[in-house]
Amino acid sequence: MAGETGESVRPGRAFIPWDDLPVSRETVIGIGTILPVAVLYLLIAALPIAFAFWASLHNIHTLNPVWEWAGFSNYAQVLELNRFWGSLWRGIVYMVGSTLLQLAVGLWMALVLNRITYGQKLLTAVVFTAYLIPTIIVSLIALRVFDPQGGVFQMIGADYLSLWAGGEAPLGSRDWAMPLLILIGSWKFSVFITIFTLAQLRAIPNRFYEAAKVCGANRWQMFRDITLPRLMGIILVVVLLRSVFMFNKFDIIWQLTQGGPGNATTTLPVLAYKTVYTDQAYGLANAISVVMFLFLLVAAVGYFMVFNPSEEVETTA
Amino acid sequence: MSQNEPPGGVFGLSYDGETKIFEALKLVSTAIIVLVGVWPIYWMTQLAFTKYRVVSSDHTYFPWPDIFTVNNFNILTDPVMYTYIFNTTVVAIGTIVTVIIVSLVAGYGLARLDFPYKENFARILLIGYLFSPIVIGIPLYQIWRSIGLLGTRIGLIIALSAISMPFAVWLMWKYIMTIPEAHEEAAWVDGASRWRGFRDVVVPQCRPAIIAAALFAFALAWNDFTFAQILLPATDTTTFAPGVLREMNQSQFLPDAYLMAVSLAMTLPPLLFAYFMQSYLLKGFQVRAL
Image 1 (cartoon, chains in turn purple, red):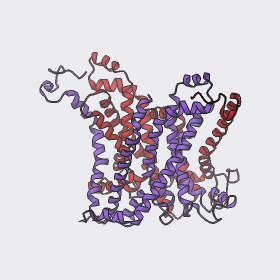
Image 2 (cartoon, chains in turn green, purple):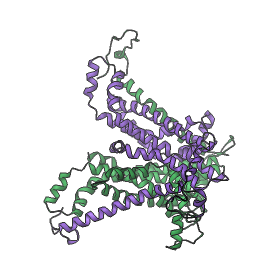
Image 3 (cartoon, chains in turn yellow, brown):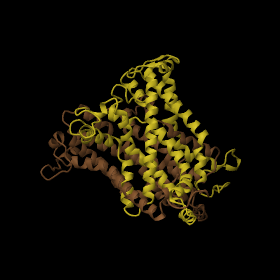
């Protein structure tokens, strides 16, 4: 249903001979509609990645515009850095720990919310609030409650559970910084999984469960044979997304611990940031960025090949 | 369900016993969710209404009349804080407007027009999910600096809009697909151009998707820390998240109670949206964005 061709019926319009051109009018308009997105994308995605790669081949001081050609020596340096491998490992720990915890909590919340009879609106609001509340505010509250001076969780942990000493800041301790980061982040991000799985749960027709009931299935069997298979596709998708997001997380880590104490919570994004602003090594930081990007790309493509989440999702229409 | 399992409830319970346990567990779970979900917000609120001297020296659990105050909220009129909040608002509004316009047009094109490599374009958009604000932000810092966008709100709006795109475009695309094309054809028969059809037939019907996309763009912009931290180094244009963190590290006098008061003010918009707009949020998430 393209527009009219041939003579322009509207006076005052230029006549464009669409029939004689190699492209159809529809193609031109179609490309036109996605042009703004494409331009934004090129500007914010393709260009920075290309720029990062180009910059990673130079030695650059962050505040000094002189670029000195270095070839691939930055990459060699990255792979030799003990801090790099340590940060990669910590990043993986953080990613896997967060994703697993969020999956468990998020799925549980979705199952509860799906079967709830009253107060649903309020509960849904509570759940959404956790997701919409700015990270900085989650961090500010966490900094307050884990502060040795007047922090209620710090006090409970010290006085009743003996997890840490009375004057000690848990977010500044080597043992506690990482687990707490995973916990605090999960308070906010589990909801992401809840929302997606809840949408899927709502789409399961009730007659399935009624039929199962008639056949004498108990609740566990219903969950195992009806609910879980229908959720599998979306679970694969959200696990991928959450893993990617947690691997890339910078804000909450920086706000709570700045990668400390020492390097205990320095993941790759934090390391890249520190390299720019603390070590002033802009070229090296870009090399870290490129390595991070490639790592994620390979991991995501691999994930798709193994699980093929998009196909799973298509089938659960 | 396989045939060799004995009938009856879990763990050999009767069906009635199973139902009872299930209901009890549901109740307990609901209680835990509400408690854990509401607790941090309650805590922030009670600290925000407590005199700052008490907060910095004591544990409080509720702002009783003798320690109750609203003076903490005076920090909102502090010129520095006010600037941060104002900048955040400007950036959020700018991001919402950009995202809606661009994603509506692109969603329409993907849904209604046929052009080569359409599906591939949509798939390439999804790579956007892999982009880490840090990976993008570090190169952008120099790029923006060389074209003069570093430290401008426009520069941040562009970055945030692009990051919201994959979700918004897919949302609009899938949503417009659900609108019958016959509506538009009827308009064309009456002599409407494609643009008129888009403006007067498609856009009004897209309202739920527009609101959903707006909410997500808002959440992203309101939430952003990393891009703002890198792209807005100067204090006068920076947004709330990096700004307040800098204040904490530099300011001589910024007690916890003040911080909680300003946090509460910044939490209110998302809180209200979460309560009044949940149906739209759910709609946005129902589009399986992959």
